[in-house]
Image (cartoon, rainbow, N blue to C red):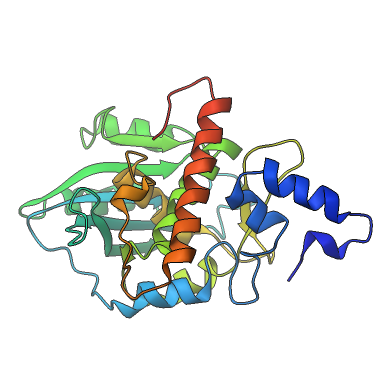
Length: 290
């Protein structure tokens, strides 16, 4: 585990200055090494174990709005023979403590081997759309390696319109927002699922860094060769399901998470997330997030 003070060239005075001037979620992960753990990284083994302990089967029940997230295999020659395509579906479910802030439950997952034709994947999405009394409220995927082609294909086929499909750029600011939301769900015990081997392997390999001169985080893998299609697809689904509307407001977060994690830890996480988004709003010239 790395701590910034382990470097003899870094002073305690500078460390304390950074602690005051840097958003807590960045300071904790980059300087204090609170998220860089042997048991995981940006999302810890303990947090993943809470997620899988709910042990909900991957079953899409009628009567819910489902948010679909995808990570498509790259079209680039060096990647198309090894990249997998992954889809995840999540549904908002009632939060007994705070009905205005629903929890998320993972109800669907599908993977497609390298070189699977796009039409096969589109047909699977079309199958989901035809399930009785199930509505796909929105679909999001990241544009890395595929650009806008997927969005264009799905709109041309009449499966989605401009309003219910989102092609995430995964620029440094965009991916930071997607994954801060994702980490917040795990930290605050607001996401329920079951054990998925590939998801656990990839989610615990996530590493967070703070590029010099940037207010945003770089989320990637600690080990070369470990894929990230599983967490990317799930994070994309969670991002459009939760959005940024009120999720990080402390009044909507239970003080008694299940299982209990400790009010002090939860309150610090809420404060860190809120301050990070406030910093994004301060620096951003685009739409504001709350």
